[in-house]
Length: 495
Image (cartoon, rainbow, N blue to C red; front, side, top):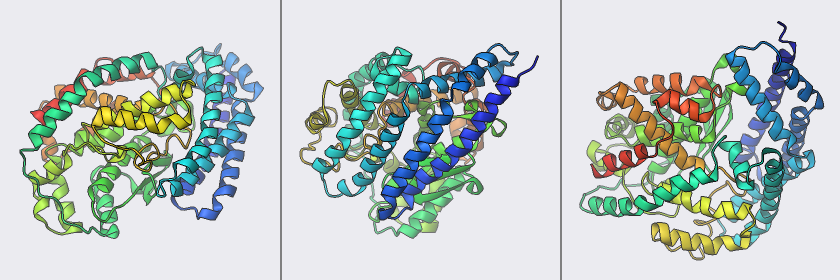
């Protein structure tokens, strides 16, 4: 039986993928390399390209092709690809092109202004731009809600974590809220009795960059298919064929850059190992942002903070930063697993990090649902930071609600993915240990290939073939089970 409609759809999606390639690289360049005066023109160009991509994704002919393809004899993989095409069609047609272009422009302007407003602690200037971003995000949520039948916030979250609902997030985060504060207290009390030698700065940026490069090589990053640059906020962008990662440097502390680079390498390797024979098709896309974060946290936390990993890092530190007492293996591991409540999410340790995510989720959901407004954010932030981490952020907008790029860039519904990702990562490593009982000894010996091969075969190469719950079940033998995350934290920090 002919597959003409399906094959035509595939050709259309390959074309959109290639145009999205250019859009992604131009967007990465805007954050990493573009001179300041180029922002307005770049924002307009990205909005124009976003509008063009939206036109292609909403062509009326696509609906006829989707209906015809559904009647054709397709194999299981083709059926999965068609499912993802239908999902993309519904999401794209929910949004008017004028909204897509206005949202792109508002997000670009707000994100670009944020880069100078954050260092100036200029909440008033940031809030002025953020109000328009929020207005458009609410409109987007209403449009998606009308098509999907989901609540507005769920409709936004579904774009990043398909199938996840706020009721499930409330359940999981509610449980976290019950045991996380006590765990933080217990770990702080335990670590207060440990002697730790702090590294002595300065650490030259060039040396840190070379260190990060070697750490990426240790983690298997393919430099012929990607690169590392610098930006105000670390991220991984580009496309699977050309992964663009960024980090940032502080000469008084090399660990945030190093661990941030290892984190982004997890994202990068996921993208680099998506099925090449599927590229250009929706089935080739990474399944969800929770799964994406599970890969970055598998690298940064499950591996990067593993007791054996300090022994793998030590030769790299000696090579690029020189010898110091702080770089002794046991001390280095204590540095990598130091728990201290802090203002900055991206610099947070593994134990306090979920508190940062809960805080943002508990603000952005009512913000999208219209229960609070932009001007309410600082007071809510201060109260929740005091409640969850015991920190006073009053008047400190730069290290408070202005610290992340997400809201200014219109990424509402994304934050839960970080802690969901931590839970997936703990569950995957629990499955690895069941299958390979000497996994930890192998990590100590530097045999990381076993971990990478497991992730490649169970996660990376599967793309979006399976919906998230099925992918997690196939990889680990069970659906999402947050108890693995709690067990991991207790074993690592209190064991």
